[in-house]
Amino acid sequence: MTEPLHTRLIQQSIAGLVHRVRETDAPGPRRTVVMVHGRSGDENVMWVFARALPAPWLMVAPRAITPDPDGGYAWHPRKPNEWPAIGMFDNAVESIAQFIRALPALYHADLNHIYLMGFSQGAAASYATALKYPGLAQGIAGLVGFAPLGVDTGMHPLAGLPIFMAVGRSDPTIPLEIAQRCAQTLRAAGAALDERIYDTGHKLNAEGMRDLKQWWTERDIT
Image (cartoon, rainbow, N blue to C red; front, side, top):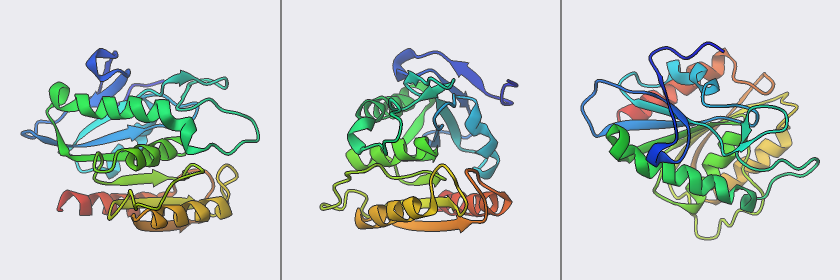
């Protein structure tokens, strides 16, 4: 696989996860996007979305915590014919939270401006992290992903959190009815949800990329 341009592969260090980073010349503390890949991915696959992000921001992409039977890595053990409950993401959540907290020391990241962008299972891991640690992230872009089952929405743990949720109308992996139930869960948890449904499958199309870029532009001026 060709390495993303202008990035470096970093072994675990104090961050606890192997990751790829694109640093910036912007003075710190730096606004930061943590790009969380989906099942069978790795630290290289999320960089296709980097062009939608504000250029001066720090970008980091961690590798998930366990090898996946189908290749690459995953954030939770996959069980056939089972929709994952939020508890299945506990180990992933702790790893992502530790990773985020190490970023100021490693790259002069601004803990007041940490954002998550997750694809598929990576979106679920991002939602689970924000649910367990309210305030750790200031926004989430969830791309053709889902919210885990069993979320306790009673205390509105995502109160006011901006979330961009991209859904594929013909997605065979995350069916539309599942995605819409997940959207209801995120709203019930208090998120400021921007749900967009696209005529595509388990991917983001050109229209989705334009909307994603606009959403990130709005984050850059807040």
